[in-house]
Length: 495
Image (cartoon, rainbow, N blue to C red):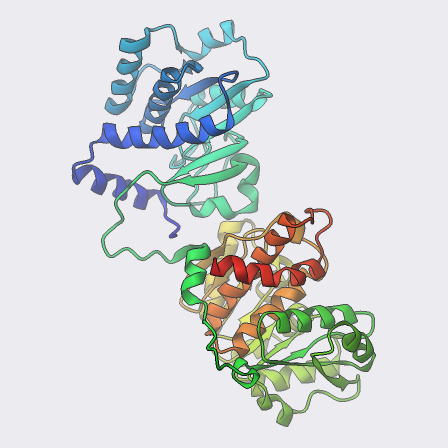
């Protein structure tokens, strides 16, 4: 699914209307989708107060109110003097069928306000495309909504919040849930906006796609992953599934090496060799004897002649930040054909930023936000960070896996893939090490770097989701659990 901006959605609206689907019918489709969502969650003991603005977002509110009234819900509407033509159409339908007792201006509503604990406030004031700040009358409604204790539902995004760019004010509805029409918007994926958006869902309303449209931002769902997953031949043998090498772990951080290498093996690599501190050998053989081992020490780096023997390399999880590791990283950058750099490998890279220019095209870097800051510098907000990340990936021709609640994979062509799987329980020690193991495994299996990164991120998140289905909670989830459920994640993709 593509991620669109407000201008693109407006153009899709226009094309749909010009195709013969009238504006009234299109608004009815949107209202039906919202009504279905509402009715699935709230029975007739709930009542709705719908705040209707003067534009088409307000029209969505009138159309939704009509659906709710026809289904015997109790509904009140807080409105303004002027409405769009389509909004007026639905308002007249309400008057003709049910009378005029449902409409209030804000002052009249506040005087008679008798909400109860089952009142749902529905924000249809301004939608997500507002430029600048809401005017005083709308802000008064926003203040009332935000000061209430009721569940708040925003239609097409919280009023006052621009989902295409950084919003420079706080006169914004704080929704518990937001319904977004047709395609997601970029602002849904940024941490600063969570307090306004709450949870969210995209509702298809039948808009026609733009001609020859190919967005530079993709919301990655299972259907996309199924299309890139390489099926195995009946005659496949381990030599065809790639030999991955992993440089990870040091004294006190052996666990990172074990997690990365086991995740690599469990993601389908035919052979895995771990290069780590000699103290890792016994726990590795105990935990996962299928993995081969090469001992390293603080005196000697990984030899350049060894590196080309492997199909793909990962370096970084739990390694020591010292001169020997620096030398190993430098050798691997120079000799490895396919490479993932993570964790302390990224920290070493940030200490030697001139090495960035020597990375082979489509090298995969997997920083979290702080690691990326050390590589590229600080920014003031997420929109700025995304621009910086795109320029970074383009400048150094790398695949950037920017880890977070919504992990972004950014390509050298500045294309962005936003991951849809995963849950907050995956914010746990070792989770990133598991992701590195998955990605290098896919690289060794001959997935292209962008596909390996996107598939790896989705598989990692899906394994975390599968773990929650079978007994884990967000609080109890561990990196080991994520590895344990990789098999279930692969099956879920195939099914």
